[in-house]
Amino acid sequence: MKYNFDEIIDRRNSDCLKYDFAVERGKPEDVLPLWVADMDFRTAPGIIERAVADARFGIYGYTESKDDYFQAIAAWYENYFDWKVEKKWLVKTPGIVFAIGIAIQALTKEGDAVMIQQPVYYPFSEVIKDNNRTLVNNALVLKDGHYEIDFEDFEEKIIQNNVKIFVLCSPHNPVGRVWTVDELRRMGEICLKHDVKVISDEIHSDFVYEGRKHYVFTTVDSAFEDISIICTAPSKTFNLAGLQVSNIFIPNVQMRKAFLRQMSAVGYSQVNMIGLHACRAAYETGREWLEELKIYLKGNLDYARAYLEENLPQIKLIEPEGTYLIWLDCRALELPEEKLEHLIVHEAKLWLDSGAIFGEVGEGFERINIACPRAVLKEALERLHRAVSELK
Image (cartoon, rainbow, N blue to C red):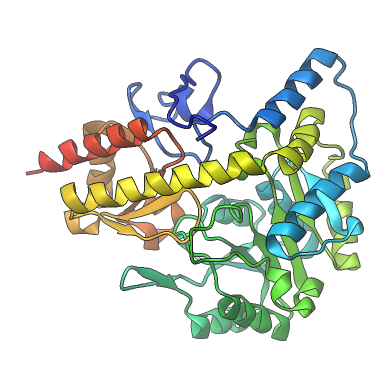
């Protein structure tokens, strides 16, 4: 490979959330962290070069994007997802969770119902509850090691609760589903039928394993454009989360105006300069780096699968179709949630994401971020193996 993803980079003492805040978050100082979804790899060289140039320039004033920024994004999504976007649809925000919060504030009122599909990325439930909206859960169903949508429950929950917004996670974090065209169409048609707006978080769209294809929600049926907010960002793909830039596409003019009014109401305007330039550089120069990264991540997934099968058969990998996050079924250990967490944190000395934070249906599961050098993943799995082997 041209890029060395095996290199172990010491991120400690860099104010890194993943490595430097274990004690503050109630974990032992010596835990090995594979929790938050950023990567332990340096980003693509073209992005680094642009960020260094910006830093050396020495003036960090108010910054806005021009047409070349939009063209870089538009070319990426047309080339790799067959999605043609219009410039007027684009709204830039510092993050997707921020955008979901703005959309909820703009399109609903307190007490209105917002539906999600747990076990799902836990900030979804937090932003719903913190905005005093009613959380409705169309729980995903685990069948033979594969998660499915209960469509009957999906529609019933919408009707019974008068749901106003459905937050779709596509690809799904943490269970790794890459939704099929039929699944997306069926969800969209139900939402159209009942006038439910769809916020589609597609931040993991660049990470799909062989044999699967990610479809942007609105490409399934152009009618979905009228009810949809499509949330994208370079942050997961190119490890840019700390630069806080996301690209939100809102085709419906009234929804877009409401979203922009709410953005204005909270006092937010331009995203940061280095984030803007890094995003453009990512989409213009980062493809080769990304393709090698995906090969490396597939190797990590293969390694984790083989290790679990050989050494930890009690723990089942839910085979991911996308993302660099793997979802482990630990229920065969027959440990209550508190004891499972103690095993992971204090015996294995690992900092993972407990499945319980993704909703009650996640209890007994753990989420692991495999976007790290293979030696780190190997150490993590060996720690887990030792801890499980010592169970009495």
